[in-house]
Amino acid sequence: MELSSSHDRADVVIVGAGPAGAVAARRFVEDGFSVVCIEQGDWPDYSRSHVADEYLELSAGKEWNPQPTVRRSFSDYPIDTSRSDVEPLIWNGVGGSAVMYAGIWMRLMPSDFRVRSLDGVADDWPLSYEDLAPFYERIERDFGVSGYPGDPAFPDIDSYPMKAAPIGPHGRMMAEAHNRLGWHWWPGSNAIATEDYRNQGACVQRGACMWGCINKAKASPDVTHWPDLLTQGVRLITRAVAQEIETDAAGRATAVVYTGDDGVTRRQEADVVVVAANGLGTPRLLQLSTSTRFPNGLANGSGLVGKRLMMHPFATVVGVFDDKLDPWKGVWGQPVYSLEFYETVKERGFVRGAKWNVTPTGGPQAMTAAFPWGGSEIWGEGFHDTVRDRLGHSLAWGIVAEDLPEEHNRVELDHSTRDRAGLPGVRMTYRTSQNTKDLLAFNVERASESLREAGAKETIVAPMIRETGWHILGTATMGEDAASSVVDQWGRAHEVPNLIIVDGSTWPTSSGMNPTPTIAAFSLRAIEHAVTERRSQAVSS
Image (cartoon, rainbow, N blue to C red; front, side, top):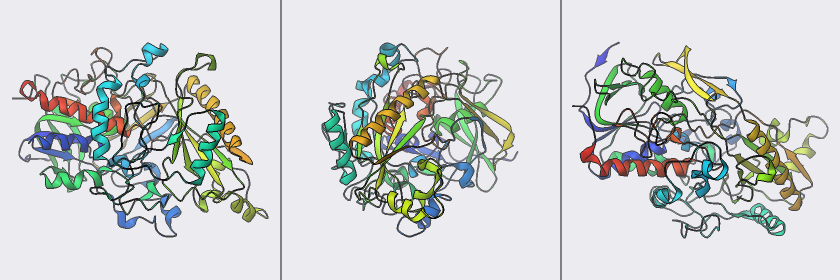
């Protein structure tokens, strides 16, 4: 291996330029730290977006596909999913997977931090909702969130930076149905600008948020953070594959070794190493970082690096209506959401719950796909009638189920495959628990009831598909005890005092919410603490 001389030593080196890494970089540079960020992908190329032309649905299935095994970008590493019920959906590049998310913005509920205390399962977080609330508020300003305050489920949210996106006739119809049922609903909160805001343009409501938002209304860090961070002096190294984190004899992190786009391997030294490479990439990097002191991987004294993988199994129920609703004319994410069945009710026979959000069903091509329509035969004489019946006349409830941690669900190195830098890929092992299956079955029945109340002439329960792994959580769990967790409440590795992990891998439990707001808020809280404690921070000499 050729090892080039390093660039100047930095105060901080960050691995990963997604939401957690971008938030960390911003907080450090604001206080005068020198920051280098290593990112294995490149900037998203919005010139290749087709959200404003007729090729939208074709491009969504290829270069804007969230599934690495389909997209096959140079930045993706091999992932063996043959032992997993769910395929991971990620974007490796500047902005991270937020480049492809729908922009749905939900804080966790207070109960999400106290699952062990309330329901006797899994673990409590070592921090509370109240600890994180001030950081949510700051993050919502940075990500340009729009919403309507006052939801009784979140009594402390009294404002958003921008007004909520219109809920449209489809959102209004579902809201009225829930009013009749006496069920909770609220206008959706989204990281989508409804007016020109900082680096973001106002949303024009194409309903194509996940396939390259060309007017940059959707908040992803390549829009909201990185242009400013580069101006502030952060050094972003793209197309660079992190190989390992080096440590000294005292067990302190000293550098990140990476292979650049030119094939040269370099070492970036720093006082503090921050890892923000998501629930797959973070355990992979820790497992790659073996040494005499850490033979089983860095910070893995508990044996939990890579274990407790949680994936948020997802269900969809579609309603077909006589009325023309055109639900694609708006934000894709969530014009309306419901938390009616979010909390545990013992009589239901399972613990925890789910969040629902109204979502469009897509354009003409999507009307002919197996998902969410159940794979029934549509070709032949009735083809045009079927498409006409669905297009503009259908909507769906998307159901995000809380997934509890189990140690047998895990991520580990796969030495039979290699990425472009010659590093092992990963193998996922994930099986959906019976509690999750029961939880989803209950919510699917209630969602069908909701759609029928709204007047649906037909409801269709979408088949459970593998391609739903948007949220990859729990593989470097946080806790107070070093014997049963990897990091503490500040993201600091128990065994490596100057290694901070700030992505979703730190989550002890998954909640039933879309995770980006909490990942970003946790990163800000962790780095704020690191900045405050800088004088006592242990570093390599």
